[in-house]
Length: 481
Image 1 (cartoon, rainbow, N blue to C red):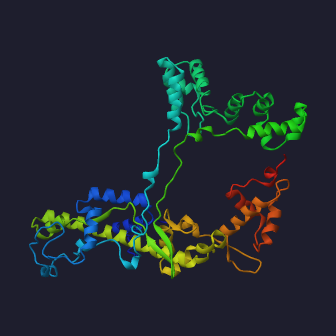
Image 2: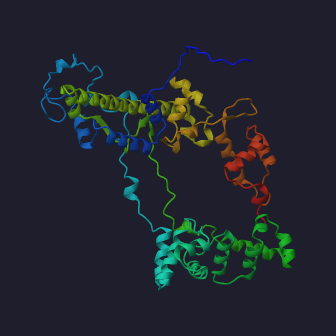
Image 3: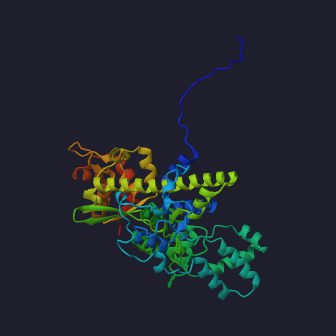
């Protein structure tokens, strides 16, 4: 069969997102911190954008009607009268001087509702694990070589207290022998907290066992030789091998449980993630009100100076450059404003659909999917998905991510899907908390217990939820002593 080349014309319609539309979509899914970084970056790249300080914002709010309309926001007389504004060739021009990124239809700001000190104002920095170890190192060694080796070792100790580098690597870094590195490592392993500098869990527990006020040979033997089998609770077999009573094994296990598997976390100043809610729910006389919170977000506007320059410049290149930057700044401000409106609409819809949760807590959380909110606010599901990513809401029941409210429903024996998966997880936690520790419930027995609470659920789903809740299986929850 002969092959030949042909030129074929095909007409089709495509939706090609413009750069501005891509920017608007991008802003929807940004968290508050990412949005602040994005705005700061735009302010660096676009000279027409400037931040409106709080003092200037307060003055604008107080001056609802300007005394002299011939004066602009920086106190300079305008060359063009206000009537010429209508005949301005730049049809995209708007009155940005009076533009403030909030209005009553979007929900009032929560800034003035309550005055709370910032987290930074009440936070005290604690010494880190590295600081604590360096302080002890300077008190324990004298030679510069030992201090240098100790610094290399401490630099490879994680926040949990474990040393992640091998002796060969530290020896190569410090230009010392492995024997010298091992000697300094043994010194560091005597530092507080006990167990720091270990390379494995077994070494960590063994260091702590040897540092006990009274040496317990049985405990050290169990850690050295039977740690994995202790986790499986083979107490009877271990007792037979050691030719001792099971009660002695149990007493040794009690001592091991008092040891810290991650000693470094005692001095860790990290791991605290503070979030600023984007929405605040307040209960009023007529129900719940949703307020927007703009804490930390810069108030931006288009610079009156450059806008004035755009109107009056006659240089073609300058005018083209300013016009392009003006359109970019205008679209950014509109995109931020649209983002705020969308967050408010989604938050208001969630509050409207979850009244019982706000009144009574997680046990009354209703199942809800993206489609429910999208239908309520007349937007696409993808938009709702983007706007609920990394956004938080402060409710009377606590601070939650907006994604928290979207989950599938579990069938009840009545036949309705009105029981949320979050509610079922809460039931599992309550059942485990109240169970007999001598005879904990298996997953099959958990199915029966949930059935008595009108939750129709399969055993594999119970196992899935139990693992998500970090609940051990019945064999490991059983209390032997």
